[in-house]
Amino acid sequence: MNETLRLYPPAILSSRKVARETRLGKLLLPANMELIVPPLALQHDAQLWGQDVGLFKPERFSEGVVKATNDNMAAFMAIGMGPRMCVGFNFAAIEIKTALSMILQRYSFTLSPGYVPTPYPLITIQPQHMEFK
Image (tube, rainbow, N blue to C red; front, side, top):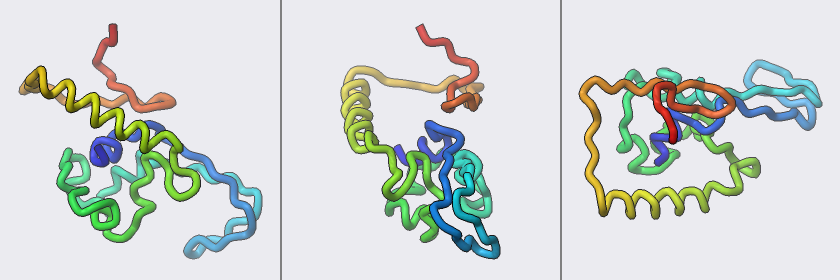
């Protein structure tokens, strides 16, 4: 689930307001400044995730988020982090696991050999060449 969220985060931008003057590396951010944080860009950065950044590798998270991010947890913020983390994440995770277990009991799946995922960023990430009926 985490690898899917890394590659295709539900939101492509997150905004935060700086509460008080803050130093961020060499930058001095003034109070009340609006920051735009792009989880999509962070989670597709080869410097943070390695040269295989574009590959779907669920085992990347086999030892948890801290190991997957090389102790840089801000690199994975598909659903926010800290007190601003999505309040429905735990419920959504249980729903996903339940739905997947029910589906996988009844069906088998194969991908077309020529299938290439083409996410389209709108307000949320959506598949570009897929029709929903």
